[in-house]
Length: 53
Image 1: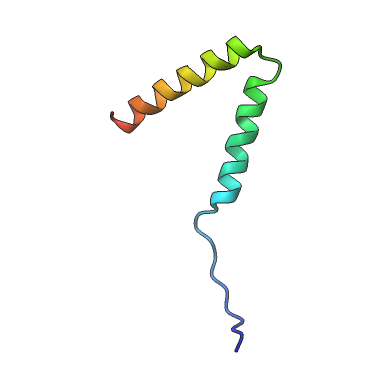
Image 2: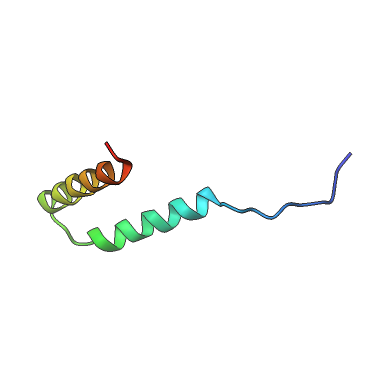
């Protein structure tokens, strides 16, 4: 039996991941390998600080 009631999403993980991926793509467009490496190292360091590690 199918139900017709739907619930509104409060959080859409797929939408959020796409937004994050698009932001990273815009920020890293045209970077060399070394620049990308530094970008990801810096990002990882900042994320660790935010996570309280």
